[in-house]
Image (tube, rainbow, N blue to C red; front, side, top):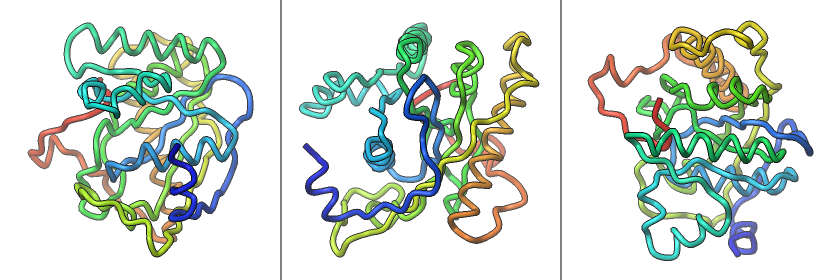
Length: 227
């Protein structure tokens, strides 16, 4: 339904490819409310049907909620046991050889220059629990379609979005270990390093020496997937 108009307004430049078969977690950066559409279409163009962990509140929005449910997206409650039920649902998807997109930042980055901020552990947990690949990704150019916290979409004149797909993260040092907080935090830091490096490559500029941490900057986090 979206593709005909979207293709008129957005041109993709791809760097790297997705596996065409098998289950994996795809973890991109996140700095615009329209990122899921950007990466959903990107995944479709790269040959895979995207599924997301999405805020449960979105499923109550008329039309949007229906589209999310019928396309197999997964609602996530921010608090309580239902959040764990959502992760179980994601695991069922990967057991069937499907991909799932999980934003490790959990919400739009607070970094002033749109670099990735501190990550949450959900993406790493799914990959380690299910013993499946965890693939970092980054995109740039989406801010021209909808800026961070923006409300309006601009498709014309046509915009260009670069999408880079990294190599699967080497999680061999963490597999087989208890998934305690220390393990998950260390693996998540490596994931965020990989995403940041990919973004620096397509932005053609160096990343900040330190990653933005909302807790240290006194910012309240909201998100699609809580630790």
